[in-house]
Amino acid sequence: DIQLTQSPPFLSAFVGDRVTITCRASQGISTFLTWYQQKPGKAPKVLMYAASTLQSGVPSRFSGDGSGTEFTLTISSLQPEDFATYYCQQLNSYPYTFGQGTKLEIK
Amino acid sequence: EVQLVESGGDLVQPGGSLRLACVASGFTFSDHYMDWVRQAPGKGLEWVGRIRKKANGYTTEYAASVKGRFTISRDDSKNSLYLQMSSLKTEDTAVYYCARSTEFTLGGGIFRNYMDVWGKGTTVTVSS
Image 1 (cartoon, rainbow over the protein chains, first blue to last red):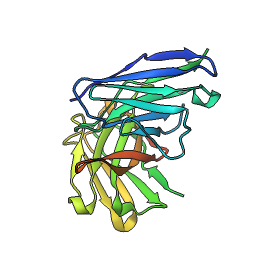
Image 2: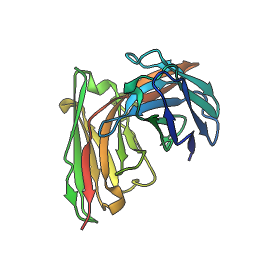
Image 3: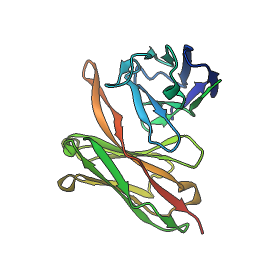
Image 4: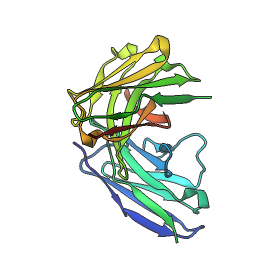
């Protein structure tokens, strides 16, 4: 199975900060990577698919990059509603796997 | 409005069975692959399995942790997705989400299906 390792697991930042979350795959997955945002008690919401394609309706302050084994999700200017947990997921091969999550908290 | 609504979650004893359902509305259900994803209390997301659409033979894929115990099926005439769970273990305790998957292509005939719409989830508790 392909393992996804997210870093950091926890991130504390101010409103207005630029933050980057990294997702590393245990083997190459091309650009078959999806990013989700999840708030407490809610279902995940897709932010990005194919590593860098912004899902319709998602603010442009979110961006994704990467291919192969290393990927990033960047939020250019944090807004209060962005404080949540973020997950990456690979769609390269079954079983599909998720990273362990990055919890983004307000400093 | 595109919507997925799960139901069927309950408290069940270890070794027991349960069937979850997910009803879709607001889109052409039969055109999409469908997935189940779960989340144990305080933990991350775990993909459970997938069922493809009719054009792909309604074939299925499963996580190793549930293979042989869980069965995914669908009824396109009812816009419904199902998860039949048997031989339940305490570690199956989780919120279960159904998700619609939509195709995207990277070109060169290579495509994948990503989970773009999620239900709110239904809670399964396995405990004696």
